[in-house]
Image 1 (cartoon, rainbow, N blue to C red):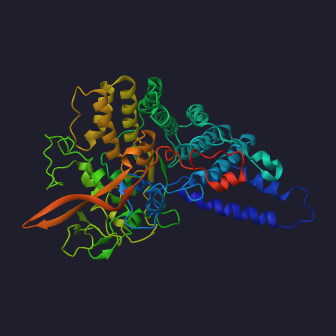
Image 2: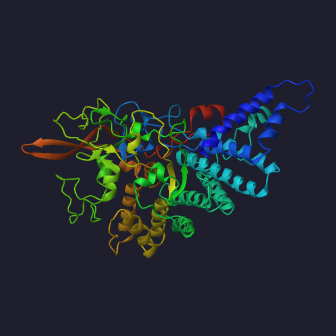
Image 3: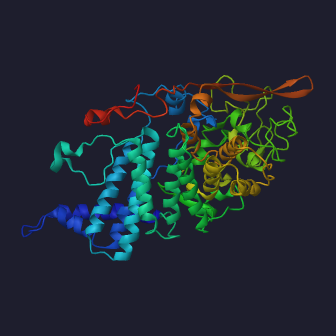
Length: 544
């Protein structure tokens, strides 16, 4: 599907040339010829649908991914959105990050649905592709819902030249938007195959999207009364995905993100990348360690925080604040769980065959940047997870074909465990789901006899670590209403200094790590001002 996206440009060009032809005998409108040609074959229609897929957002062509908005990571320099706007919640309707642009993708999906429904293309092909288009439309509405709450639900093709002001619609409520997304997923799941071509939506993807929205709807952001039935619904849908018996955990936690393992047994839905083209990933050159062996290898703009590092358990499975864990704050990187070593570059670790040194006073360019003056890490840590050493080429190199995994089976297991625990407590199925994720990383099972509250804490920690740097943390902070606690204050760094004959480790406020979050308004991002200027029926989110 990746390469055929590019072919769409050729089709559009050909149709443009066709429209430009002048023929005095022409009796059929040129636009009708172009439209008929586009929907006259499944191949042409597929190219159009591929363009709807191409709109899926991914974090591999930016040095400032959404993880930098959270307590998991921060940018190493002043300037990016995460530092200038998000850190202190200084965004406003005229400059806030937004998902409003996805209405263009929704319109494309609506065009596809309308024209393919009316076409004479083969019924089996139409059934699957219409379900795919409805899935993509539902996914784009999910992104809008997660950022902005209730939004206008548009399922027809709007044309201002024909409809005038009728194209402007008021916002639907958050509940109506949620119901639309989940109803769409329920309606199309049976029309989607269990497996398909790489990158295409499947039954598992539709059910996972549905289950994710149900998990959000059951969470404190939308369920202040903690209605158990909502958690039960979310658990049921995630169990449906598990029971498809299609997915399993890939053996290697880190390598599952590499291009050679694209579309592996754990992947439910992903955004496709194609290295060496405009569709290539540049993650290593933008988000990896800044200086390696005296050479700049990346912009270095994703710095894991001490808060995240402290969430990684010891190899014995115990959190570092457990007295029995064996954690030594003066040897903090010894005896940690496997995912820590697969995810974080720390002092004394290796990258590209070089030892990474974050110590002060030894002339290392990677020493924790306490002055916030360059791209060296501000926290004492750099990103490792998902970075392929073969593509550690500075800047937006677009060389990597590793896909961005949007949904994977480990998340389904943890979401099921969370919802089932909230609905029924820590039963055997909850333990089984969490322990299967832990087992891959060679961690022992959770201790038996946990209370619902203790299991909740364990699941939240497991989710944060397992899904770190996968664009999940912001949404979890929002849905669990943790942002007002975790994003008020200062993120922390580690400073390593020599005291006599010993190196000492001390946690300090990270330069540029100040965070501020107003629960009275920041759980929703504002509707863009230009959207409100165009559509007077839109009502702004509270307190903006």
